[in-house]
Picture: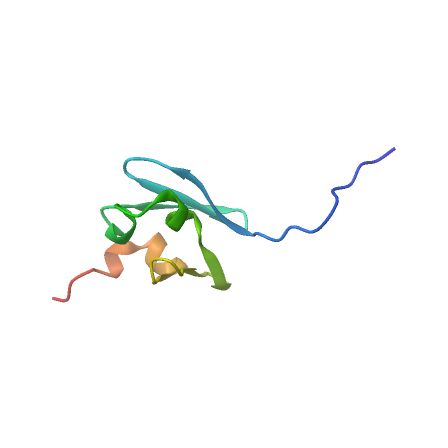
Length: 86
């Protein structure tokens, strides 16, 4: 006898953990850490707003309640995308 999962997997992107330093985003089997130092928009946001993330296209994430959108490149390499201009 074999078991199979019922239904379809509707969420490929989710916040898996939130800490005092940032949060972890799991998307397509890859876990990414977003620190509040690099992504300050999330620091004072409610958990509900942080976990309300959508992957609008592959590697492009949007938090509609915070009006924040980030690409995977800026998450993986925040030093290449400074918050202030030089």
